[in-house]
Image (cartoon, rainbow, N blue to C red; front, side):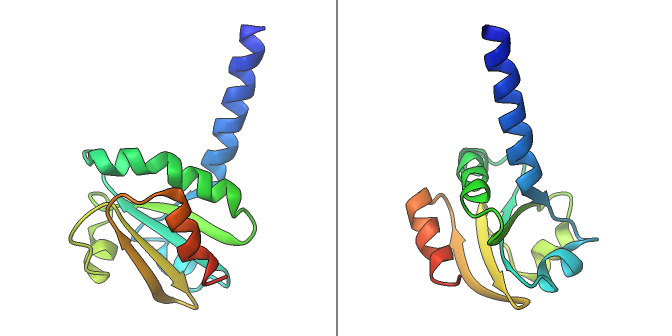
Length: 123
């Protein structure tokens, strides 16, 4: 029975990971700026404690908004050009894009319900 739980947990984790995209300097233009759907971008870094605490919330939003909002993460250390372009000075930073433009920004830790309100007003 314990093995079944682990397998189910792994499948659920893999599903969430596939819902959360990885954005990079190389794919940002195509996957975010040219996207037809609303896009939530989580600017983060591996060393950032608050970013790690926000991670499960971003994962949950990807599940909750699957098919309606593209959710992804951009590591600012590995992709400094995009972070610079959007003047990311503090992380975690969540930017909401619609039609290639930033339509909302949330800096720092935020509750899931607050982030849902931000997304809902742009859907």
